[in-house]
Length: 114
Image (cartoon, rainbow, N blue to C red; front, top):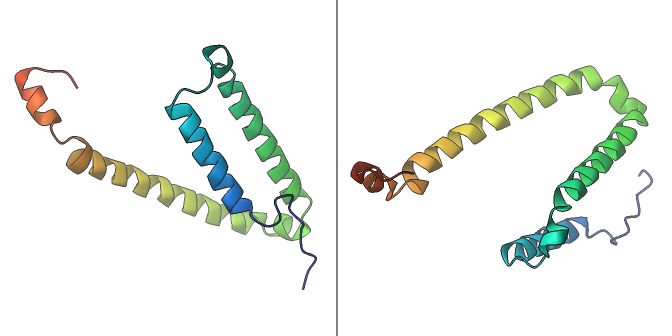
């Protein structure tokens, strides 16, 4: 087999991501971040995204097998992304029409705004 990578989390990457996401939701829901600090969250998010994309690009660029199949992988990625977006939009429209809007129709009949 090939050389295995050693992760700083000891191979529990998914659990670490889920715990971090859950902690972020709890912190945001209960407004545990002071207002003077919360305006920095957009900058932190963008910085993290840039670092993630840069590191993914470096990993792709350093792998000759991926670079050799980039044309084929690009088409597959486009098809996967296209259908993911299309079916996500259809699902959201379905949820909005049949589940989320419950009770809002009566409000609109009386003249209330959505």
